[in-house]
Amino acid sequence: VASAPAPAPGSDAVAYELFVLSLVLAGGQYMAGKAGAFRGAAVLGGAAFSSSLVLSSMPKPSRVLGFLDFTGKRGWDPTLMFVMGGALLVALPFFQALGLASPFRKKQAKVYKWASRKLDAKTVVGAVLFGAGW
Image (cartoon, rainbow, N blue to C red; front, side, top):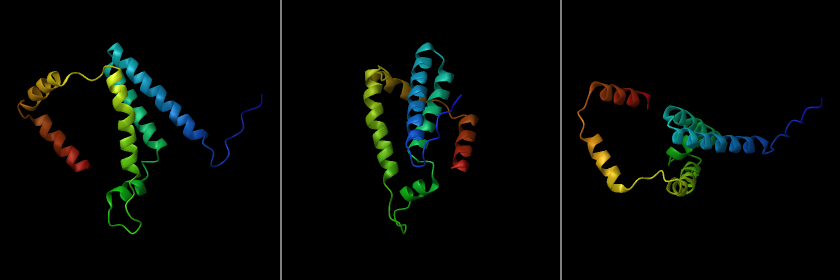
């Protein structure tokens, strides 16, 4: 049985495969969320997000440093901003079309309830760990 030839260096085969993987994972996230499997939806969403970042070559330290360093020798690299903006342009219409956005008044009541809760040890420890990791 003959196997498929390996993609030539510089071909876009890997990019297309990552793109399809991202779409499949995002679709799985939507279906899992509708079925009530919220942890599964969160895992699939994280995987879709990760594969999208790899597709756009954003995990490269040089990209992140280029975006954060305005005074560097090579100049400012705005590609991270364009990736984030492009993601918003794609995600927001779908978010509205799929009915995942609730009216502002409902959200406002939930946010107020969440913001007025008592501060507990779990929140403080989580904030400290997040700050240390950052």
